[in-house]
Image (cartoon, rainbow, N blue to C red):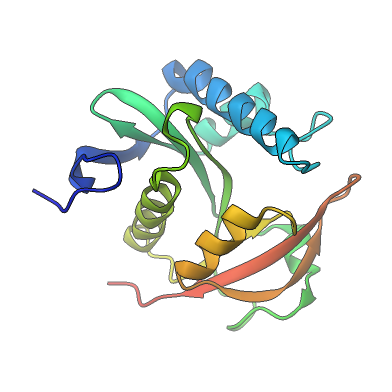
Length: 186
């Protein structure tokens, strides 16, 4: 068995799998919990209709980009591995490492269940998402977050991502710090 995480559960009991239509409601609950948490923290991220809502989740599922983290059969987290080029990322105030147009995967819509917040589940989710990106053949992994999202910023840096600059989504409070992780693909 794997080493225990902060929940006392071996890490290997957590599994990352592609989301299905049957998961939409559970993903929506987790996203809404995260949206509420961000608001409580004073962050405008995911507020005013800019959260990954049902249509976005369904589109991610159709593109085979949506994943859920499960503990036994319970969905405890969600992430999207977006592989198409993002115009917002292409307009970075800064510079990505690597050559354009090298392919990359962007980790978006990262959220964990409120029931598991504060016990290291975000790390497990992102570690498994990074491994999945590598298994899909991507060595260039990108992620962004709102500049005041301190827990996410800390986790991103602890996982070895390098700050590359600012990106701006086309809505109020759309500014995000953008990070990149370059890994060898097995």
